[in-house]
Length: 203
Image (cartoon, rainbow, N blue to C red; front, side, top):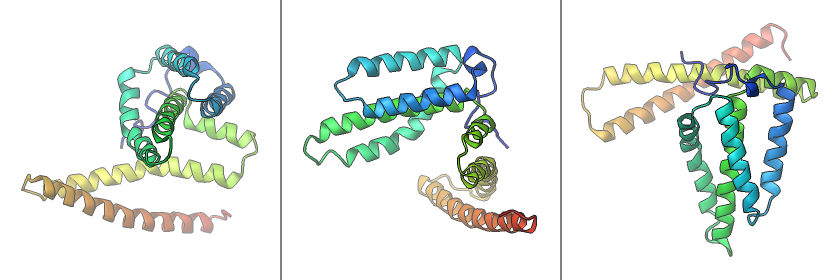
């Protein structure tokens, strides 16, 4: 099982990692709010923020290639949302604003996830008196996300061992089958976990 594909560098030792989780969360929230609220004409702010984020990544010893790969995974969702605005009046301006602001916000969140262990983030949320159900749900999602990924990889390997043709359409069909089976298995596992939690007095 791979436990580090989300926050591979969160337990390194660097000046950024040694900062308190509370301070980092406050800074991240402030950066995201200011980025969303800033007008698109505030180019010096966006350029300055990009330089600051790059400096933080270097200080935290997080490779730029790693950040780039994370953005490649998430950027299609940003572009998909932005494309919906192109057919509105001033669509290109809105599209540019969505892409720039969302990209900077995503980089900020990726840096937070890779400089702060998720347990520390949950601890800060609990101290901030956020709803206990929300904190518990996030903890369970984080824990079982790795279990589901491991399950998907095992299913994919088993399916590939039984597939002797290399046509691309067969690969897509196999992926769709694995995704459907994974959904069924994850639903069944969630029901079993919930029943076990109830049996132990969880409410």
